[in-house]
Image 1 (cartoon, one colour):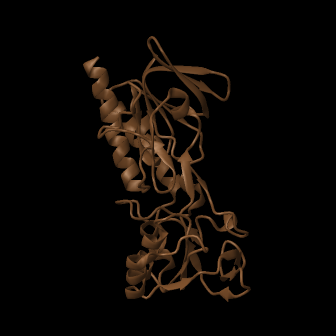
Image 2 (image 1 turned 60 degrees about the horizontal axis):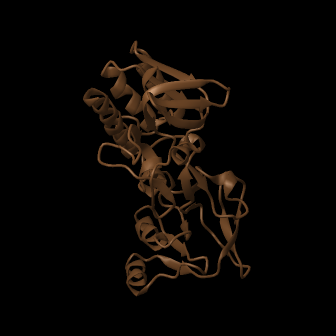
Image 3 (image 1 turned 120 degrees about the vertical axis):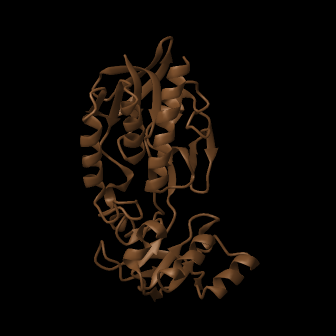
Length: 297
């Protein structure tokens, strides 16, 4: 039996596993090999990793983790988990089981994009979710914000620091008086006719077609996909969830502990704020939290 199993091999999972390996715990990292950022060519705003490909960062992270003799990593998908008298059993898609005294869920989230023609094939290139992660790379171009939740007007107010911005309300998310005044001060144009298609040679973007037939020239758009924790593990274990602006996330305390004793969570699956640096930091906290719970036991 392992001391800890970490499910999820992106930034949060590796950060948690590294803390545990350095604490000389027997830690298993289960990685399905499908990180959320696999659609992006580069990670940005991540200290000392700015501009590096996510897969290169994770490859180096795995090499550093596996230099510790108590760390193990398997490429597999975790499809089930349950609490047992001695800890937890995790079921893998290949039919095998692995057991541990503690779990860290770092599964990340799955994105559901607005259902618009041309959006999926541009995701991570010219259809973007975070201006802090990707805004600099599309700077000084005409930019759009396709509203997808009540905080879209807030996102639209940010974008002019990267380029001239148009806020597409989709006829659903009309800014209130305060939001409209802020958008006006920020020189954000507002279009109320819904976007019905993205145009140009993907993954590039030349513009968007509106429901009234007009075409508005934009070279990148920001939107907020709906998110949910990837995989069934948190639900199967009965972890409490909170509702964030873009979807549900696992409820955790300051050290990553969930509502289920012995289960910790980290990264995008446990926060409404999604960012590589924040994910790695939460992984550190969850790894330390799991270790200290073992110490107390």
